Length: 64
Image (cartoon, rainbow, N blue to C red; front, side, top):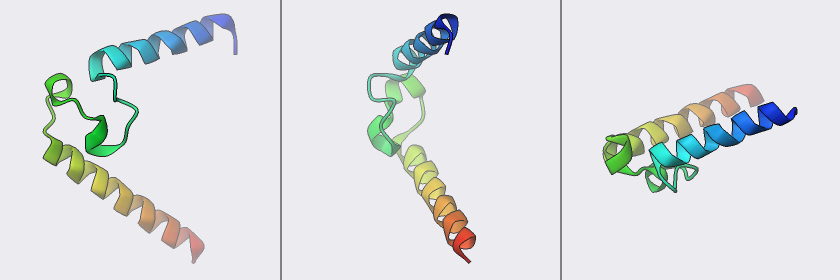
């Protein structure tokens, strides 16, 4: 990577952390700071559960 690309990448990570909170890298409800995202934990839990089910379906289908 070039130094300018690294700089942009680092800046993007800092912006995400600022807007989404310290825990933004954690999965599911653990990574949700509702005061910053304005998305209720129940919605995050639903999205995460749906995501995991879709991944499971994809990997199960790929094995067949």
